[in-house]
Amino acid sequence: MALLEIRNVTRRFGSYTAVDNVSIDVEAGEFFTLLGPSGCGKTTLLRMIAGFDLPDSGQILLDGKDMVGIPPEKRPVHTVFQTYALFPHMTVADNIAFPLKMARKAPQEIKKRVNELLERVHLPNFGNRFPHELSGGQKQRVAFARGLVNRPRLLLLDEPLGALDAKLREEMQIELINLQKEIGITFIFVTHAQDEALALSHRIAVMNRGNVEQIDEPSKIYSAPKNHFVADFIGKISVMNAAVMEATPSHLKLAIEGLGEVTAPAREDVEVGARGVLAIRPEQVRISHPSNESQLKNHFRGKVHDFLYVGDVTTYIVELVNGAYIEALLPNSAPGRAKFFEVDDEVTISWRHDAGIFLNDPR
Amino acid sequence: MKRGNPWLWSAAALVYAFLYIPLIIVVLYSFNDSRLNAEWVGFTLFWYKALFNNTEMLLAARNSLFIAVCASFCATLLGTMSGLAIHRYKLKVLPVLVFTPVAMPEILLGVSILLFFLQVLNFTLGMVSIIIAHTTFCIGFVAIIVRARLQGMDESIFEAARDLGASPWQTFRLVTLPLIMPAVVAGALMSFTLSIDDFVITFFTKGVGEPILPIQIYTMIKVAVTPEVNAISTLLMLLTLVMIIIATRLESNGSSEGSAKTHPVKQAAK
Image (cartoon, rainbow over all chains, first blue to last red; front, side, top):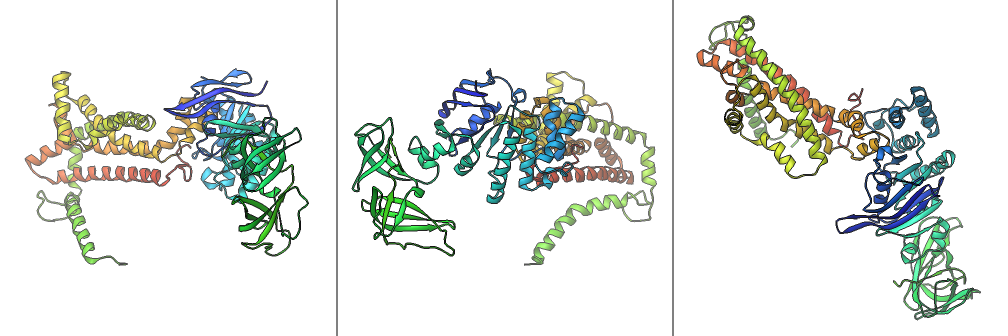
């Protein structure tokens, strides 16, 4: 039995359906992420798990027990809020002690646990400070400590890293992974940042307009997106209209309008004649001088339309003969600002026969 | 424009002079060694001594203090509750109901409360009716101050308390109340000052019984303006001033914190 079972949960606000018949199972010890653009229903779902909102229909089971109707303070679930929500009139130690006091733990135990958690989040001498005396990252750590101190069955994290700058964010991501590993508490993490979701999670549920589009491990979500939305939302991807010419257990043959034939990995649910898109990640696309004839099956001529230098890599946007655009990534491993191609350069674009993916829903 | 326009400065000076010179004169003449408020003779504390031997005046002061304490206590309790309710339940009619008495002309309030007591309730006027009347017009002030403070706060603080195991009552006692305390105290002080020097509503609701300070002062002036009036006015002014200063301090502390999370009042909880 899963630790948390969300069964057919629906939540409407007037005529707007925020969460539409969603079912998710979260296993004990998992780092589970709800990922989606703003307004996709992820926060509403989180609030229903915490008990701040009630589903219009469906069940939320924790350890097999229905949580609907149980107030937030009676649920073994704690939340780390986006704004941290530290009590401004209490010291750091009192903030962390709060859930233990509410659970009527003995004073010695409270003291011990608070000190333990302060150590764990690397703030051992901060117990007597007030929240306004802390930096953003420190407040964040106190919020984690306060959420974890009473060992909830489930810790909910509502975009907790959203307010931090990029460098601090990366640091906190690593700390968060370690914290979860050490303490072993199940995390449900809400974010709209796909890189964060990929880096942190054991599994990700990609949400869109109140629906779950795909639940999978990060690598599966990235390399085998189920549909166009998931492919587009996670990372960069180029798409071209395609029709299935041949479907075998080993591969698909696709016809790309105005370009020709390409080979793509097989998919079970696809039949000959189906229309859709071929989606391909920039790092799977090779870009080379037209003189180097490519050994790969899938190769086409194109012209550099634009490029984007971002330090470690350069992304080239190449216009193909049929007018479609495809992105190719080239690592800048050589010192200095590498620039292999200029705008309007003739290039050859190629990719392996097992790269790219055919997605059923047309654009 | 670093120094500002001299015309503006002199206009401002005139306005302040108009406001404060009469007050300064009242205070000065309370120390004047003369029965008449006409010319300065010499310094004396005689009028303050006379005041403290005036039993009628002392009784009036005692009554007024009693009324102010009771009314501000009731108004703070009810006003804090309304402030919280207005903030939590987004009913449009609630703020209108609570805040209207603040803007209403006092004479209207006085008359309506008088008629309500006499004709509807058939109530004997006296201390109790004054306390009730003062409470009604102070509730709005407290509610406005409390609500303003709540509006500046991060809503998730209260959710966090529930989330971490506090019942609604514990959340109020341990989180909400300490955080709104500066506003509650400011509201109480404001109510106290409004009550202690209120004339119009008191006049309508006092009946014929006990002497009340502002009315007593008015009666004294009708007979003769002695420096004793100046003395009691000075004391009243001092009391009001102190309370107003404390109240505005607390209030501005509250609002400058904005969202309480960035700059909290630590002493509130301790």
